[in-house]
Image: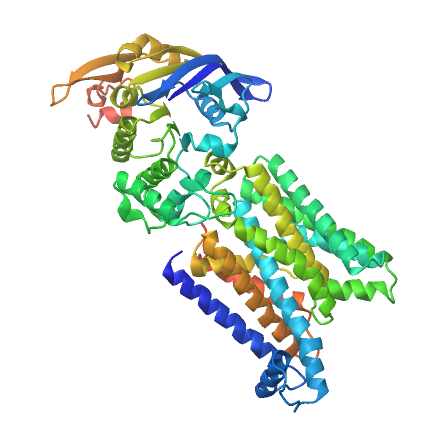
Length: 280
Length: 337
């Protein structure tokens, strides 16, 4: 399975946001999409999903352009995990996961026992089977994001697209969700996610695509591709990339904003903070 | 569907049957329950001796049965349409009346009465104008960039009052001895003058709409997650939206043309149903049908029994519906966030 974007341009109305980009996504890959706010990550993802009509170019799945496909056809191949949200109605978790089966259910039918079994299995796969009967709007943000991933798994797609899956999650939940996402790559699924933190790209993805001003700045293995210079181009700030070793003796790269001192090292002087100098 | 929901549905069916039988017995002309049973049995089995006066039979079959059927039909139709609109627009605050569908249908029907159209003509006008009203409301709301939920409600209120004004205009120019009273009494909402023929005329569109919505009930769940998400999950949202709006408006128009504008049922009943069985449309839709039918039948019984003179149904549904909805809002016992 291979998804290929060929000279894809996208945007809203006459405004072009992504300008003729090409890239390939293969099964087993977890690709992070890095870029500043408003650089077009969401627009690109929505265009691949068919939510926005492209302004040119092709989205090819094993050589076939999917832009003319029906929503159900696309949904059987591409799953989508949206940013955390709250629907207006308090559905049960199992019902939310069952919605992932929509593309496999005939127009005038409801989910069968088999669909329910598939939904339960995807909850188990994410270790959240105990949430089955809970109300989706009453569980925590991290749990809700896992439910949305379970729903995408129930869809049995070949490619998973996620739009900042960890935004608005606390640190612990970010790690939990990303660990699950990394495992999805092992399930012969391809994962394409937009993300805000270069560190997440280092830790959890095997390829990174850096988007700048509607073009691909570069793409490749995160450890080789993400450099201080490129992050400066993307985000306009100086970043130092430091290699550290964790307790398992693996090298891990970490980004540190340059020229930054530990908060405690600021000396409080009478010049700039007279009111605090007395306290110091 | 959970077992516990099955038992809730069975209970609601039982409630409807009880109110149904009670409605035959209650009324100014007394029909003892035993007599009712023998009259009904005589229709099915031959050879039951006639021990009742012909008046009883007329009261049961010509007066009470059409009225009972109409109350159940209209209540079920408005509630089902309300529930479906709410899921469709991902908005728990809408209903046939709030979206302007009722006012649009009312305008169409008033126009039909004014031009002395046949029952079919009146219904057709009601449907067409109901559809125009909902389309306008939805079209306007998509152009308002603020809070989507509020935009739809506001657009509905605007379109609703526009069509209410148009109805007033028709009333103003209508013949004060003949057409004006007809339009006025019909608008207040009444089932007093429903004939068996009216029932057949309304039964077909209401049944058709209900069946289609019932078949689409799983997809309404998905739609309630938001349009974009529903499409990504594999729904042809454009087509589904047209189908649901078509069915809901058809049911609303059919109700309006036999019973006038009966407010609040389409908003209150779906919420009550959601409180009882939760938001899953697989259960919510049948619950709304049963609950809506029972509710309006009960309210109609009150309308004809409470006072010496009959109280208009539309007045009573508002008098009951508004405080009840307020109670839901203030107690946050609603089935939505």
